[in-house]
Length: 158
Image (cartoon, rainbow, N blue to C red; front, side, top):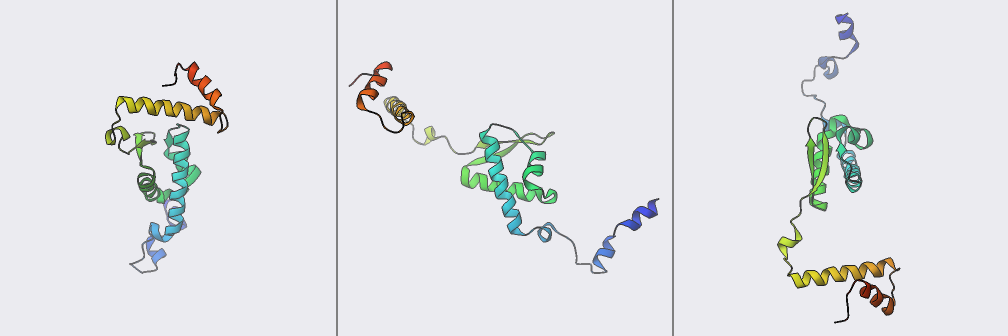
């Protein structure tokens, strides 16, 4: 039985035909363009999963995107570099047993860079409320409607 199993597959010496320099590598199996394409698809997949607040599983990445099992680490590393450089996100494994990942923000907090004073924060909050109201009304609002909205929020002129 063991001889039958050995005879079915090619051995290393049969594959190389005596040439000692032949070692199949990942780069020979998949071109850099294929790896780049899969890494870009993985970045899109990870961003969609993160937007939906769904933890990302290694099995799902392999099944739905990567499909090159032996190029997994290379593709994930390249996607991780892209996420860091372009989006400021870091791919973190939260459960090593189940191989579950999430994306975390790796950018410095804006408050640490430009700390706003309390008065400026209040103005920015009011500005966001006004702009949100204008947006919800179809990007155009009459003055009277805006003042009525502000009056309901107990914001008076001056």
